[in-house]
Length: 196
Image (cartoon, rainbow, N blue to C red; front, side, top):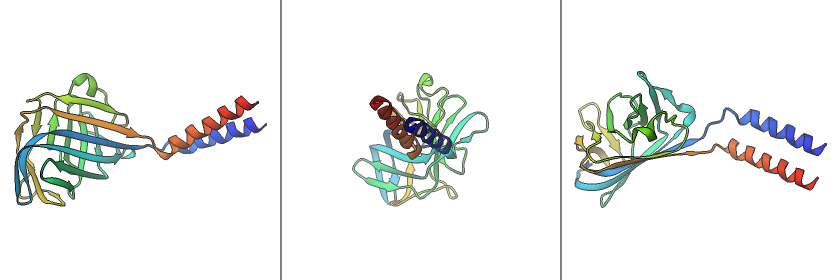
């Protein structure tokens, strides 16, 4: 009888958490020239880290998906780490290109021709790790009078053009609390069955 009530509880948990998505964390890593505030840098390693709720995934016109970040920052070797104040997003297009852009723009700030087999069909709700070889990633226009990228260190600009180094990309899906609760309920049912 108790096993039946545990099963019913697990079913209720499953129904209540079925629509709960998780967080997705993404990183872009490479080498770039540019400036942040009044500081110029050349050939510096950078990491862009961002986090988003997969419930906010949108379909891109022309195919693919995009996900507006809840928060993002960039760490530049020897320069510092800076929070993005300008809203940003990660996208995957119909050609399996993965990129980083302003949330309000279709123009990419960083776009890579990452390994198509790894990126093809990526749903932005699961994990992926891939690399764009040197020359296969493009830095877009980071500065213009109306499109400055603002950070906690001032305006950020990575020099536009083709990357001379490889750029790596990774995404990790972090399970929602509902997923953990469902796993816990399943463990309780399993333990209860072993005792009987």
